[in-house]
Image (cartoon, rainbow, N blue to C red):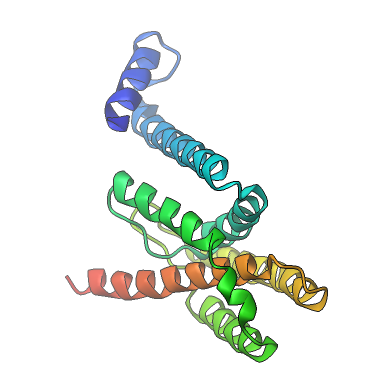
Length: 192
C-alpha cells in the first residue's frame, strides 16, 4: 500500500518536472521511509493515548531511536513486521517496571554486557544501509557516545531512585539484542 502511494507521489512529481527521472529511486526510498516513520509515530501516539504512558513512551523512544540509528542491528524484511515488532517493543517497554526490582549489581552487570556488545558488534549494517569503512568508524563512535550518555542518565536515575530507570535499561537491552540478531543474520547472509 505504501509503495503504491509513494509511487503515485513520485510519478506525479516527475511528470510535473518537480523531480528528475534519474532521482526517482532515491525519492521513492526517502518517501517510503517518511511514510513508514509517520505511521509508526502515529501508532506510538495511539499507544500513549490508550496507556497514558506519555513520559515512558517518550523516554523509550528517546533512548532507542538514536542508539539504534547508529548501532544498527536486525531489520524486519517487511514494513508490517517492523511496525508490529516496534510497537510491541513500546508496549512491553512501558510495562516493564518489574526491571526496577533488580539490584544495582544486576544493573551494573547488564550495563557492562550492553557496553561490550556495542563496542564489539556495532555498527551492524543491513542491505539498505551499507557503510563504508569511514562510516563504520563514525557510527561505532557515535554508538558508544550515545550509550555513554544513556549510561549517565541511568546512573542519575539509579542514584536519585527515579522510577524510569527501567525504561533506559530496557531500551539498551532491546538495541543489544537487535545487534546480536543482526550480526548473526548478517554472517548467515554472507554464506549464502
